[in-house]
Image 1: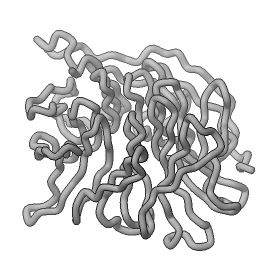
Image 2 (image 1 turned 90 degrees about the vertical axis):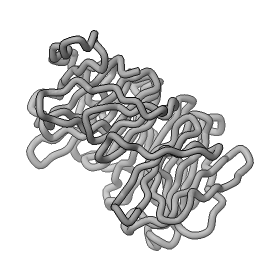
Image 3 (image 1 turned 180 degrees about the vertical axis):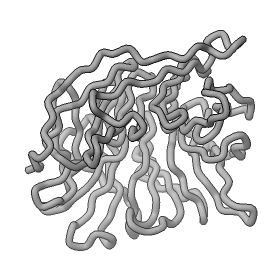
Image 4 (image 1 turned 120 degrees about the horizontal axis):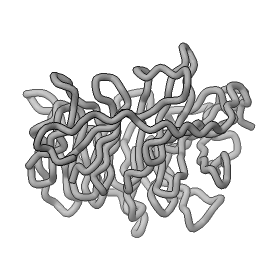
Length: 322
């Protein structure tokens, strides 16, 4: 059973985000709005972990001094879901408002969970009694990707899994040797995973096609973070340092050229991250509306052109970025 420390009632905050004036000549393109936070939360302590493909939802955390609480934004308004754990994380959210992550038991074991306003908190199935785990990502139809492990053998049994939407209460295990952990799941159910451990530098990344139960390796010295529309966002080490690549699973790939760090991807192959622009699949850019002299840190980029992240340290949403 999950710990009940830090129980927070569901409080909907409907304050309208403060909106900056659009840049001259921008015609509202990639217009910024600053996201509200719950009363008493540190506006400079917000982390946005993920968002859905429509741009309606984002999930993250806020801090109150030394305490952290999970929050969900819907169309720019913030709410605090009633979560029966004092420590834990919501990592992603889908277009139905279902969020996923993990909570901690009274013994501080990690339990993979999903949460929605309709169903409340649900613990996800693990392959063996006594195993722990974390949910990392969810797609629109409700397939959830994550990682499970024997808490007595943390590194040796770590495996990437999927909790399929069409078979509640079951779990699918990635057919690969050695420890793997899941990073993301595409809308068609394809899973992005890494060889290695949560607690150590991972090996090569891989894509798990669950339709044929096949695993495709993405190459040595690769670290992929997101998958969307058959595109994978990954980094690669070179003699000149780290480079970011958008790789089409059908073969073609391109270097990201206009971002210091790439962190978010959508089904069009557009990329965002640390910088002042969103870079399109064809290499052209869309400037983000920003305070003068600052850069953005975008961590969620929807298919509709809504982005979430921070600007000058404040939680922000950009709209009309297509």
